[in-house]
Length: 88
Image (cartoon, rainbow, N blue to C red; front, side, top):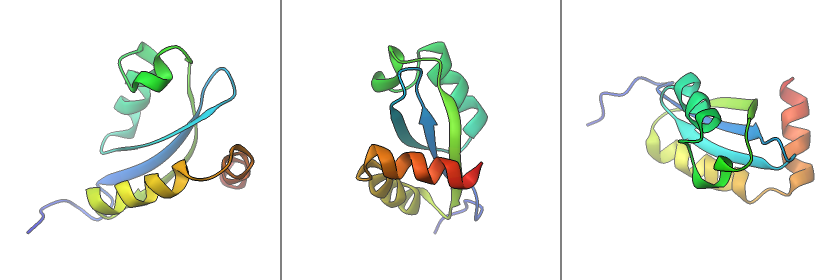
């Protein structure tokens, strides 16, 4: 049985300095974005910083967050851009 709170996990999308998008999951979104900007986050973002948070949504648990992250990964760049614009 999980002891995580309902919004403990977040799914996010960042825009890298080269204009590409990177989706991910985190429990502490601020710390995760900071790690990407320090170059200690995902390998993909290490040479593409700084990153800017453009989209985030709560996920109930890690499994739900990973499922939604996979959906975001499969979106085209244009679809990711639209998603980011809708939240801003």
